[in-house]
Length: 229
Length: 245
Image (cartoon, rainbow over all chains, first blue to last red; front, top):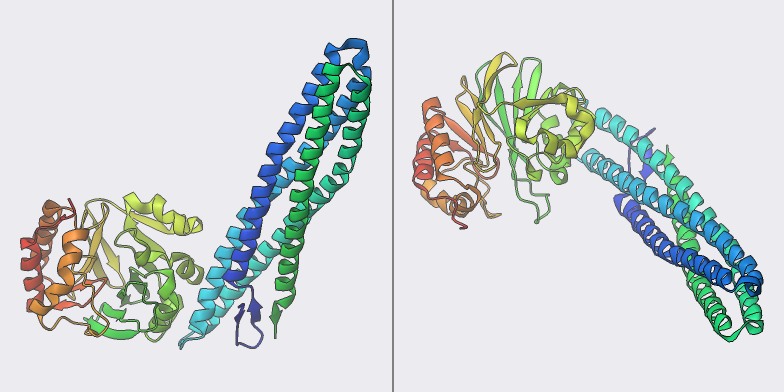
């Protein structure tokens, strides 16, 4: 539960350490999934390179394949860029979430102190420091929101790009049917690989979108719940 | 949290805060000491994050928190001063005294305060403080490799950190040792295991005997006073430590 303060004019509600830890966990999961996607993106880049090599080997007959292989290469490049960006967002998200959790812990301890007997100028002093740290915590939360929006944007771009993959895979398959037996089998295999990659990416990106949306909801709720009286 | 004034000689007043009944059972009980002089106040081993609320509340009964001008860390353990970022939020200009070997380690508790760090040399030093004097006495390897005790020659009080520490059961709440022989059972295991070197221990005992303290104030457990000070030094000198090997 978020802490509840009691002073008039003071921040009455700040995100708790537990809530920041929740955001941290989601951030770590976003990072982990982004890194997993990055491995698949490198496999896609390898596949596009292989396709270009095979197309080049079969000379004139390989022209249609060369065109398709270039398509795969372009797609692989764009997908990798998005995933690298997503992975970097995941790193920053996790770091910001840890910093936020640390600030939430300080605020929580100051709030615990305010709930006890305090004499002298202690109460005003602790309240003032808690508000300063609370302000820093809210800035950290707002930074987290921006990073999450970036991550969500990357995930949406990946969804858009993934639409092209089955199209390219079908083009490979169509050309493979017309090609010689050996190269036809190779391109058919590549088509299957592309579809398998797309399945994995779609699943991961779907989960990533859910994760970023849920975490953004938490951040938005925590920001709107903050109040002063 | 219990609060008690140990002594006051007109220059420096010593207070102890401890036996926190509200702390979690998983957290070891600690004593925090406050020295108040004219225009200056120092907290010795201000404690861990977990007990910060209780300590700050206890201290506020004695002085205005803004009057705190210094902290001392006998060594680097988390129960000694993981509350540092919380304290430095309240007293950002306070000086922090610690062994030179721990400065870059303690910076992990809050690197933004490293400019306030005052590294103590291995031989210790004398600090004119609040109209009185404080001596930082080397206690290396007792138990930490960079470790200090603090002596107030005027009040004859020695803050000994983990030396003399006792792990008291919840029903023993006395602030001062009353039956030394009974008290040994709460200290023996701790000292045998936590203190790694007989040579270092005996060096510390030799230094402390020369100071002739009237009080030895550990960070855990009860305070030794009067004859119990000598009883403790004799007992500690005779104890074989470093028993985990």
